[in-house]
Image (tube, rainbow, N blue to C red; front, side, top):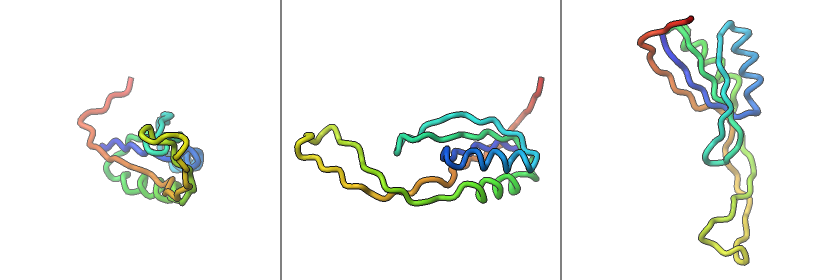
Amino acid sequence: MKLIFAIVQDQDSNRLSDALTDANFRATKLASTGGFLKAGNTTFIIGVEDKQVDQALDIIRNNCKAREQIMSPAASLGVTVDTYVPYPIEVQVGGATVFVMPVDQFQQF
């Protein structure tokens, strides 16, 4: 058995949740916040049998696409406000960060 942690952008969350449900996967959703963009994310926790890992990863891959987004960086603490001119930068958002971990024991009460 494996435990899959999938961290996805909120924009992809509902689509992924629906796809997992349609494929009969059970998942727990947790609200989370990314450290770099400080934007909302959703962390999915999915328990699967070893033979289902590839199917679950395909569902995640097909429903969480990376895309480019323009953002203005926050002011740095070391720069005075008078001289700071934030130039928008293009960053990649979306996609999924996925961890697959072995499960030694599973109990359901």
